[in-house]
Length: 437
Ligand code: GDP
Ligand code: MG
Image (tube, rainbow, N blue to C red):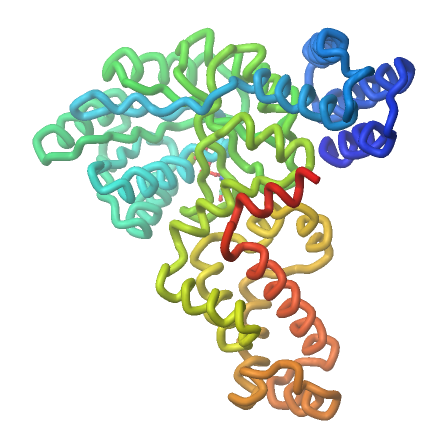
């Protein structure tokens, strides 16, 4: 993928004490190829590498003390700039603020509507209402109700009504009279751009004049994402882009291309199916992530939001004293389960993403882990180093798992202890420093 390719390209520079004009050119070629592989439009990729080259020459990379590092910085800065520079917030100044979702079927509108409602609700001053305007499938209305129930947000729907414009208007009216200050309107999409869908979304848009019209797009659709974005933008002149499914085989290319073609900011990203899997889009962090450095800042922020602070402090004390045991591991797992998909989170940590690729940590695996830990004696949980072969055998038998699984658990435990150690104290900052060397 893109990060591996850039890793390789930049490795050439990092490794060499000296850079010649030839390996600058070589590196730029690699960077360009990496961007093309990630579905970035050819013209955009070419312009990008030309700009990097100009900057590199302008800043005299070749004669600088650490040419590799300077070159990495230039590539990163340019990539950040290409994706919009600074993070852009939602305009929530309306009363109520109306947010309209648009996009193809399956892009993640309904899921994201829920995530955004939950995100805003957690900000305390916001009281969101969800409005179900996908009238073509009864299941679509049900889906939004399920989501609303999950996050404790009211959903406005009108099952007898098949006029989405009327429902949208009634939803906004309901919000006004019942004290909601944000209205999120979920709409119907189709599998491909067609006139009827465009006319419908344009009509809703005209009827309710939203503060924010958001275009939701599946980041795995590559070049198609750009064409769809263009079609919706021509009709809606939308305010921002939501890039979903960035948890899968991440194609950072979509972020770059869409921004370049429609020149609208990407505001949020979706990183999983759970309601917590939403992040503000920070171009600089995305650039880091594309460059394979891990999205540490997001990780730490999300961790801070979800971790019970007092418990975290207790655990830090234990880590400092080297008394972190399986009981703590268990409670950490429970915390992490709350935070969303564990693999996503691990993937954000530099170096760990690759190491975790083979490990399948799903909810079932959590159950197995819990079973194995419950088969340990309190003494073993507190002192994992006591787990010799015969104890492992007993635990395997007691929990109905294999010896290999017990061994894997021990390995995971060690990884987790290491990670917890890195995260304590200086937290993200310390990790950042480690990475920059
Ligand atoms: P809609 O047709 O635009 O409303 O799309 P949905 O919200 O129903 O989402 C379609 C599918 O994509 C569902 O199975 C969602 O669970 C899934 N989905 C949505 N967002 C994400 C995401 O960020 N990551 C992953 N992995 N799946 C997502
Ligand atoms: Mg939907």
